[in-house]
Amino acid sequence: MLSAMKLMLTFFLSGIIACYGDNPNYDSIHKLLLVSFDGFRADYLKNYRLPHLQEFIEDGVLVEYVTNAFITKTFPNHYSIVTGLYEESHGIVSNEMYDKDTKKKFSQFNDKDPFWWNEATPIWITNQQQENRRSAAAMWPGTDVKINNTLSHFFMKYNYSVTFEERMESITMWLNNSNPPVTFATLYWEEPDASGHKYGPGNKENMRKVLEQVDNHIGSLIYKLKRLGLWENINVIITSDHGMTQCSPEKLIILDNCIGRGNYTLVDQTPVAAILPRNNKTYVYNLLKNCSTFMKVYLKEEIPNRFHYHHNKRIQPIILVADEGWTIVQNGSLTKLGDHGYDNALPSMHPFLAAHGPAFRKGYKKKTINNVDIYPMMCHILGLKPQPNNGTFSNTKCLLVDQWCINLPESIGIVIGVLLVLTTLTCLIIIMRNRISSPRPFSRLQLQEDDDPLIG
Image 1 (tube, rainbow, N blue to C red):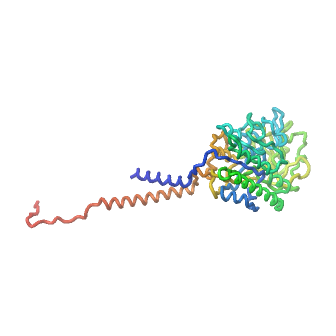
Image 2: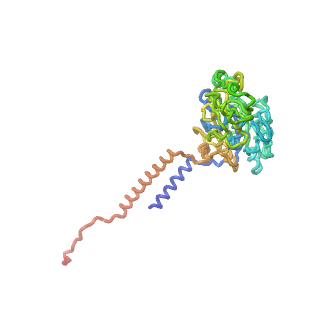
């Protein structure tokens, strides 16, 4: 009886797995295009009309907000997405960096030295190292750098003046015509980040205009992929590196009011400022600690563990973290009305993720993932063995059509349902068995006239 119950349970669960994880028999190395619209704050999706993006989401999946890595700036988070590593592990710890040993400096205008990038292996390199595949990139940070002696097979050197259409044309041409085929590609666009800095996310009219342009770019990309016959077979991920928050001229933290510039070097600027003390670290720390109630001051070893921002020599001895909407300056006025970089727990810093293609479910929504989780998911789609990373593949399994996805309440419900079904079946089996095997009712022996009863 027990073995029969086990057999029924196995068949029942197999049916559930088949429903949840039906594999549509797509090739494990279907092409994957990763698109980033810089500074696309998650709640823009709810606050603005974006018909092309919404249609993309309705036929695919949406992660409502992505918890990005601290610090929430462009270079570090783009590298976290393609390596699955926190910033302390992949080494791009900010947009501005200084290495004390080599005296080298890194900035968005001086970012081509492999020295800064070699602590990790991005997915476009891993993709090219397996079998006979190629990768392509349109200005994703790091793709025009020879990382670990390898470049993306096709790439565009970063140039702000190159239009989205020109970038899109190159990427789609490489995806469609290369031999061996390009199986992984990236596409980067500076908006709505540039406008978010200029106007602030609170400027609804200007943000509406730029987000309409972004949505039209998405529509153009979809149309191009359809026209080339790629749409049904390519997986497309659209996401961003960070969000954006409103700043104000009344919310300035002026360092010159607290400490002389001769005491420190400002390596990275607002809203997370990296401080390299020139002499007495404790003296500099104490002066900054009392500078403003709207700024947290950490010695490197005091930085909260949740930031994953300790274990790299490029992280400076003192880190200043402004409260949301506040700006750290040495002296001067506000230069931008919107900014990012703040605590990655803030909703305003969160981007979103949408995806469409044969690897993804249709019409599925998930509340949140971490941006380091995107990397193992992409490796799975491409059939790659991932490099060591901080991501968790199980966090994204529900987005994928070939994975069994079930949450705890559903699991409890299914277990209870199975037990009820098995209990019912067991009762029915017992009842029917009793009916079949029960003896005929007792009847008294009838004596014949010539039979003598037994006397004893």
